[in-house]
Image 1 (cartoon, rainbow, N blue to C red):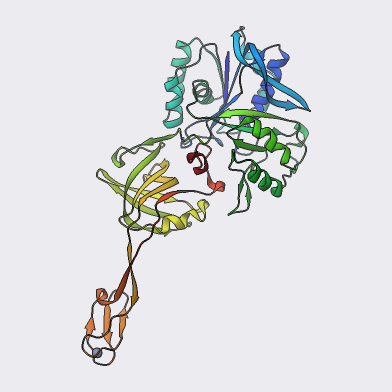
Image 2 (cartoon, rainbow, N blue to C red):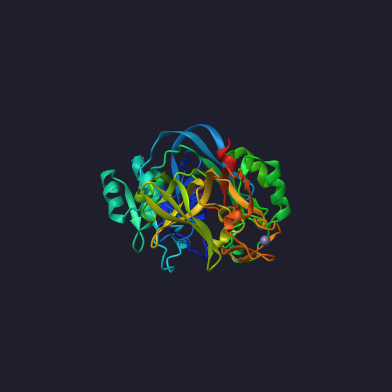
Length: 433
Ligand SMILES: [Zn+2]
C-alpha cells in the first residue's frame, strides 16, 4: 500500500516530513514492514497557494522481504525498511492517521491537508502534471475513484493533490535528504547547529549539496522557521548522509529519517518558446538579450529576452544577492538559456540558473579623440554629445574616440546562491556529474 500525505504544515510551524516520521513509527508498531525509503516529493513550486516547500510525503508498506535497509533512528534505535514487497495487507486510512492528525496545522488558512491510501500505484502522468502544472481537487478525485483509493480531505482538501502526485512519482533522477527531528518538548525552544561543522561536512562529503552558503554566511541545512526539523542534509548517497550527520555538532535530536526525493532533479522545468510561456509553470527558454539589464526598485535586476516568437522579462530578485551581478553584466546580443519559474502579470521568468551560450564582445573607450586639425587632445561636451577641441574649436562625434574591442568570455552556467535555491533546482554540482 502507498500512503501519501500533503499540506499539513504552515509557514510558521510543523512539517509534513515529521508527520511521515510519526506514521512510520506507527506502521511498524502495527506490524507492517516499510518498503524502501519513504519519499519526499516536491511539486510545482509556482502554485499560487503553496504553504512552504510544496512537498508531499509518501510511505510504502506491507509485508516485505530481502535485507534490512536503515532508513532512520529513534532514540538510538534503528528504523529499517525492506527492499521488496511480498504482499499487501488491507489497511484503513483512519487507523493509520488517527494519532498524527494532531500535528496538522488546521487553524492556518492556507493549510488544507489531504491523505491518500492506495494499493495501486497511481498513473505517472499525475506526477508530471503535479510538478509542472496546476491540478484541481476534482481532477484528483476522478483518478482516485478510478483507482479505488481511500482518501481523506481536510478543509478544502487540496492536500490530496500533492499526496496523489507524490504516490505517482517514478524517479528518473533521485536524491536523498536526511532529516533530524527534535524531541516534542523542544519544537519551540532555541536550537543550535554549529556552522563550522557544517562547512566541514560540506568539504568532507562531495555527494552532499546545498549545505552552506559561503557567499552569504548561511547555514542552509537548518530551516529558518520553528519546525520539528533540526537540520536536513541533502545528497546523492544515503550511506554518506549518515556519515555526514556524525560530523555536525548540534542540539540533541530525538531521531532521524532518510527520504528519497526529487529535490535537485529539475523535473519542474520544460523547454518552451517565448510565446508558449504560461504563468505558474517553470521553463527553460533560449533567446537573445534584447534590452540591457536594469536594477529596479527593491533591488531586483531585470532584462528582456527575445526569440523568434516574442519577448519576455527575466528577473534575478533581490534575495539572489551576488547572482544579480552576473545578470547585470549581460549585454544586448548575448545568447542565453534561462531556467526558472514563471510569475503571472506581468509575465516574468524568475531566474534559477542561466547558461550563457554566447557573450558578445564590447567596445570599450580607451581615450578621447585627437583633434584632426591641430592634433591636441579633445574634450567631451557631455555624455553622448561628442567632443570639441579646446584650442581650435573643431568638433568630433562620439564614435571618433579610440576604442578597443573587449572579449567577455562569459560562456557557461551560473546559478543563484544556496540561500536562494529552490528545492527542485538541480545544483550545477550535480549537472557536471
Ligand atoms: Zn584643434
